[in-house]
Image (cartoon, rainbow, N blue to C red; front, top):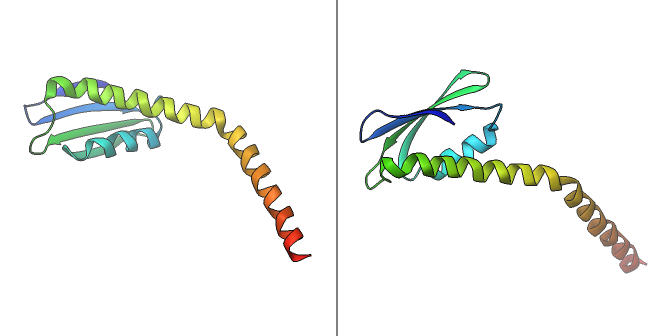
Length: 110
């Protein structure tokens, strides 16, 4: 996230580099902000998205907004990294669990 700017008390905008934050991370961050903001997302290039947030009633103050958005990006980026790093372990556990399940079905049929 960069070029964070507040245009008014009701609107702010920033750019996101999808080389740093995946489309899934950007979508999750925007989802969590959607209760407080009307969101506009434009793809300026394959790796650059332009986001505009327009405040709904009782939304978070702009002073805290940049901090909140930055924290959400970091949070979802770390979650994505952990999911990628642990994918092989999860797959092994699934295979092990379901391999044993098919053995039990054979015993019931016999």
